[in-house]
Length: 552
Ligand code: C2O
Image (spheres, rainbow, N blue to C red):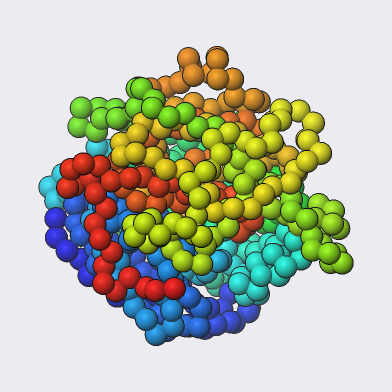
C-alpha cells in the first residue's frame, strides 16, 4: 500500500438549511465533511487541527486499528481531546477491509456536523466480487438541528428528560423537498439508463435507524460495514446509526417517463417523541441525447414515491437481518470462532437515576432522570484517557477491571418491568488476554419502552451468530447459532424485546469502547470498554503512543 495524507482543519462555517443560517463546526468548511479515499493496505496520516472553541476528537468508525489504538479517537477512551489551537496526526493502516466506513467526531454531540465517508477500494488490480459499477455515489444520512446540538444535549442532561428531536433528516447534508423551505436543498442523483451504480450508504444520523427506498427500483446489497456479503435484492434497506452498506442500483434499460424519489425515514419502536418526517432526494435520468426524446420536459414528468415500511415494522427489520450472510468463500473466508473461551451476557437498555434534591426532573417521573446502562452500570467517562492509564499502568482512580459479567439486577426481560430500574455509575472495564475467543449475548431490557439498540464495538469486527425474541435461553438457543457464514460487522441492532449473540477473537491489543450508536443513549451511559492485553509476539503488541498525543 501507499501512504495518503489528509489535513482536517476544524473550523466554523455558516450553513443554511430550512431557511435557517447558523455557524456550525466543520472540517475544512465542508458539510458533510470531506471524503477519505484509500485502498485496502494503505496507510493514512490525517492531521487534525482544532480552530474552534470545543475540544475535538475524530473516530474512524469501523477501522480495525490493529496495533494503532492511539488513532481510534473516542474522547477519554483512547485519547484526551485535541484542544483549541492544537493538532494531532491520526496514523493507521487499513487491513483486511474494503467497502464503506465513515469518520465522525467522538466527543459530546459534535458528530452532528462533523462526519464524512471513508471509501476503501480493493487493492490495486483486485476486482469487486460483483458487477463493476459504472459510477460510485456516497449516500450519507444525517440530522439537522436549527438549534445548537451541543445545547440540546446539555439541556437534556441537566433536566433529565429526552433531548429535542432534530428538525430534519438529511441525505448528503440536504433535507430535501418534503420539508418546509427546503426544496432547493435537495440531493439529486443523475443517472443514465442501463447502468449499475454503487451506492455507498452511511447512517451518520444521531438517534434514528432509517428505512431507505428508491421508488420503482430494486437494490442489491453486496457489502455491510466494509465486509462483502452474499448479494441479495430488496426494495428497502434498514440502516442503523453506525452501520454502512454498499448496494448496487441497476437503472432502467430505457429512459422512463418519470422521475423517482429516494426517501428515508425512521424505524422507531421506542418511547417518547420521535421525528417521523421524511428526507427525500431525487433520482433523475439525464436528459436523453437523441432528438426523439428531446421534447420530454423533465419538469412535467410524474414523480414516483417509494413505499416505506411502517415506523414500527420489526418483522421487516428481522427479515432483513436474517438475509445478511458472509461470503464465506476461499478468497473471503468467514473466520467465525468455533470454540468460546469467555461467555458474557449483557443487558442493554434504559433506566433512571435519582434527581438531585429539590430539583424537578423531566425523566419518567419528577424524581428521576433518564439513564442507560449495560448490566445496570451506567458508564462514566474518566477525565484522563483509559488507554494511557492502561498503557502506563496507572489505572488507579481512573477505571476498575470489575465490569459485571451478568446483570446486577436480574429480571425477566420480557415480563412486567421491574420496579427497580435504577442503575449505578462507574468506569468499569472487562480485561481480556490476547486472542481470547469471546461470545457476547446482548439482551434488550425493554423497560421504559421497547427499542432496538444499535451496539457498536470499536477495534473489531464480530460475527452475528444468532438473534431472537424474548429471553435468551442459554440451554436451547446456542444450538441454532450460525457458525458458518454469519455476517461480520461492527454495529448490530439488539432487537426490540429480544437478544443478539456475537462472537469475536480479541486479537487487537488496546482499550476498545462499546456503546449504543443512538447518541442520546451513549450520553445516558449505554457504553463500556474492553481492555485487550498484548500478546507475546511483536505484531501482537500495542505500539507506544505518538509524541503528539494530546494531553488532558
Ligand atoms: Cu461511530 Cu464509538 O462510534
